[in-house]
Length: 269
Image 1 (cartoon, rainbow, N blue to C red):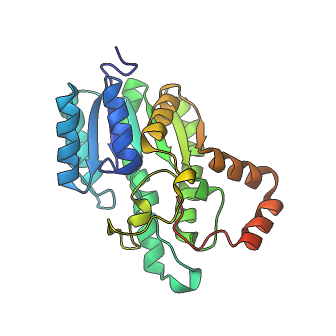
Image 2 (tube, rainbow, N blue to C red):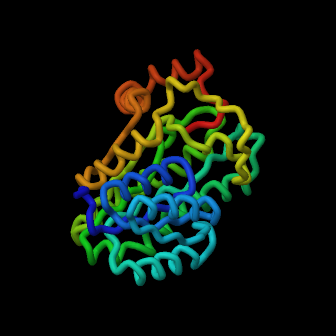
């Protein structure tokens, strides 16, 4: 019997990348899963796959930037499955470019998905998590700690959700809800194939070498385990942990390295 047998996990951004892999891992561990994302065909294929393996999967086509959609999707899914134990607020994408090349609309678009989408998810699910004494995971990024050239909108959005997770960790502990901040480095994902308007380009070149990228299946196992154990923070990969440690303890050294070696200027994790 899996660690999550009889429990229910909701994942936003479940149609690809980390979200898709986390949904598979929860299903593998016996949980029923609620899949939220914009792309119906992707969700239908994933739900069918999980149900073929004997699990229960409920899909909700949902855009976290649209007022009321998350609330309706969550209410409908919980009415069908009866409870909610784990919420993975994962939906997001990256806006890249130099400060002078970007407009205020670029920044607004980034924050609407990566920050307000997380807020909507948390607000729509918190009462259910209080009822189950469950767990909320907020997916941030190493870029939320280490802001690189060419990624100011993305780094801003992730720094904001890091702060949100910190506050919610204290607030929700009093009502029995654990909050885990998930801080990935480079992971196999479509995020670097998505342009500043949120459009996916399947043929886009992957700028990050394979040896720096963690497979999504391994990332999902780490995330599900950390959330189950109610950890406050999970930072991965090894390179991600090193970058965060340098930023926390030797920020001047890291700044010199970034300037000297020209790190940045490309889409970040």
